[in-house]
Length: 210
Ligand code: 3PG
Image: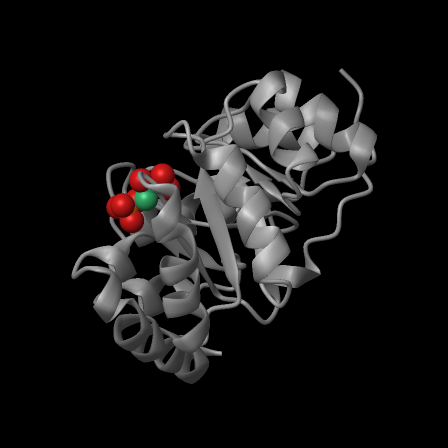
């Protein structure tokens, strides 16, 4: 196994510390959800391939919300990855490592953020040239303490912890130098009408940390 150099640009996360994990069940909810995020100060979103609307929602979001950075999440194979990019996704997130998705992202120079939970998985991703990894599911795999321990041996890797993160613990993660941004779905728990206010509070918290 040799170390690959990937041409992937992750600077879009420098000023976007919260990556909402969006599940679109009804396509007509896409713009109200994204507008809520945008009004709350969140300019990036991961639309997940957990529903059949994902591709269409990504396309719609990219066309109608040009000021947001729209990516695809829960991408677990090559086909989904190709579709996501064809629909306009600017970055790809997986819950684990998909070699198919990785290869498509390398070819297209699209940032790929696979999920990892152990040092071995970090090493494999690192050997493939990846430098930003999703720590998932963060709370189940030991939360902040686990991330501190894992990151201590990988100083050049940045993480996007996701899973069990909300406004009550997000600053503990963001305080870690290894954390590039956090992911989560907490801003959706009180319905579309409350997305903006929950997002706004979270963005304020993130700013205090940064
Ligand atoms: C994900 O897919 O990244 C998680 O389902 C989001 O986790 P959360 O719902 O606990 O924030």
